[in-house]
Structure formats: C-alpha cells, structure tokens
Picture 1 (cartoon, rainbow, N blue to C red):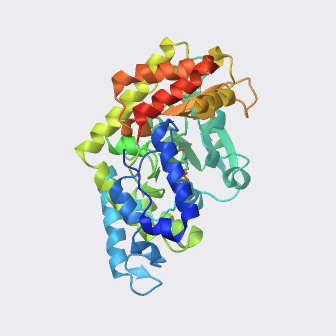
Picture 2 (picture 1 turned 180 degrees about the horizontal axis):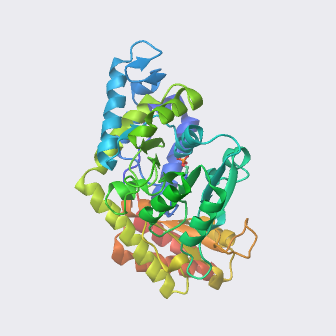
Length: 409
Ligand SMILES: *Cc1c(COP(=O)(O)O)cnc(C)c1O
C-alpha cells in the first residue's frame, strides 16, 4: 500500500507537523481501514497535489480567466474535463467543485430556488446530510421531502417514491447515498422524474469510482446531473466533479463560478485529471471488481457469524451491518473494533429503535482494505476478527497484534 513518506524538508521545517503526519501514516498502515468513504490516493495524484499548480490563481474557466498567466492551467483543466467526459460518457463536465458537497451545492444553485421541495432518500435509510437534513443548508433553504426503504426487505420503495414525487412535484429528485448498498434502478428513477417533471440528480459521491471501473451501472445516461467525489472509491484527491447533459451546462457553469466558488484548486484539478486516466485502466477495473467482491464476501462471512447486512447483502463497496446480536450499540461496536485495530463508522438501521447517536449498526467499506492487499478468501479472517472483537473483550489486543502483523508497513 502506498502512503507518502514525510519528506525530509518538511521534517526539518516543521518537526511538529511532520511527526503528526508520520503518526497518522503509521496508524493507517498498521490498522484495518474499513471507513467506506476512504481510499488511498495514488503516488501520481500525491505528486500533483504537492506541485506548483497549487499556487496559481485561475478564477473563471479555460479561455476566460480573471488572472494572467493561465495558459498552462487552462490546458490542465481542459485535460481533466475531457478525461472526465470520456471516462463517464458525459456531454458536460465541471471539475472545479472543491468537494462532493460543493458539487451538490452547485446542483441546488442551478436547479432550485430557496423554498423549493427537494425529494431525497431519508438520512436514516442511507441518505446524506446534504440531501435535506435540517442541520445542513439543504434542509434550511429548501423544503425536504423524503422517500424510504421498505421495512421488510430494506430496499428503496420505488412506488412510494413515485407517489411522493407526483404529489409534491419536487424540482429535484436526488438519488445516490452514503450507506445504501444495493444497485439503484436508474431507469425507474428517470421515468419517475419525467412523470413528475423533475430534475434527476444522481449524487454518485460513493458510486462514481465503481461506475468508472465498470463495477456498478452508470447513472450518466439517465440522470440530468451526476455529482462525484474523487476521493472515495477512486485513487484521487479530495475533490468533486459534476457531469451533466449539455442543456444544463450554462446553469451549472455559473453555479460553480462565480455563484459559489472563487479560484479553483488547480493542483487538485491536475490530480483529478490523473485520477480519471487511472480509473480508465484495466488495473482500476480489476480493483473496482475486487472491492465489490470483498464487500460481498465479507457480508456473507459476517452473516455466517450472526451479523446480518442491511438489505441482506451488497452490490457495492459498502455494507451496513446490524450489530444487535452482539449486545452492543453501533457506537459501542465501533469503539470495540477500534480497540482491536479495526476502523469503522457507527451507523443506524433504517428502522432503528436505538437513539440515533448510538445506532444499532456499523458501516464497512472495502476500498482501502483492497488496496491494503486483502483478497476475497481473506474475508473470512476479517469477519472472524470483527465477530470476535465485538463479543470477546479479552481478544481485542491479540486481534490488534494480528492485524498489525498482517497489514504491517
Ligand atoms: C460523501 C458524500 C458527499 C460529500 O462528499 P465530500 O466530497 O466529502 O464533500 C455527498 N453526498 C454523498 C451521498 C456522500 O456519501
């Protein structure tokens, strides 16, 4: 697994920060990383991030900047745009959004007015706070309406989604989530959006890398607009991108700049260009398939140990695991696993009865673990570690040692 070593110049210039970076590298290298939104940036991406491009001011777009000296960065941005369009087969791409959330803000800015109804998956059912949560601007400035997963099979209830869309007539229907592990029926959503005369926005923050690697169905042919994070199941930098149909280009272009952002991070845009090229390789396709296979095998092995996956399995890189059988809350389970060197997020079940701060679940993702060199046959070992760490407090230190040896450096 490739992590950047702290350069000697940084260690000389600021030993305090250098030591912290070193500690974090050691932590990441010696423990099992199962946070579903994380991956490992490639060496080329890291090099681009640290380059001179980070110093360049380039407000505006290629060929229409507000600063001098933008000839080279225009080429960089055009390259990132053309690679994004090629990778996803999209008419239009904007690579300036500083993050997935910022890309989402541009979608709201382009397609909604304050107060408009926006229809999205409930947060507890796998949605994301930027899809209308009260704590987020999206819930404060727009009128959130939600769709749900069914209580019995925990799959999206497309009938309820359609009924709700036809009653409330939202300007935007949002699909794509943070912890829904199943494929989404893009064709069904397209037809509901057409019936309701709504914009279909796919928030592919998690999904985009799998789509790029051919391991998940693409929303691009169906959605009006697709937003992407380049650091989730990608080998990319922390950043966002927007893909859309040509007709939406003018609105999205203005939404990102000047409505929301100032100067784009040109170093990150170069890193995104690298990410899109890397994601077009057979090596990345193989990786994306291995990530999904690992998640599926892990889900099966955990079920055999009494830990069921929400919606009875996964089609993606992530799984939400019901930890009720261990007698722990989600929060306590995440803490117990941390003691055993297993890093996960606490999570909630769609119809959880525990307080939200505790939850009854954990969310696991296999993007980093796959980079750490784990393949499908080893998922039974990982499941053993998880199941034992949850129920046997005395075993946690030993598991931590085993993981440190397995992951070692
Ligand atoms: C992670 C995530 C985001 C936010 O992405 P950032 O790049 O962290 O801003 C937005 N939407 C969904 C569904 C996500 O899972």
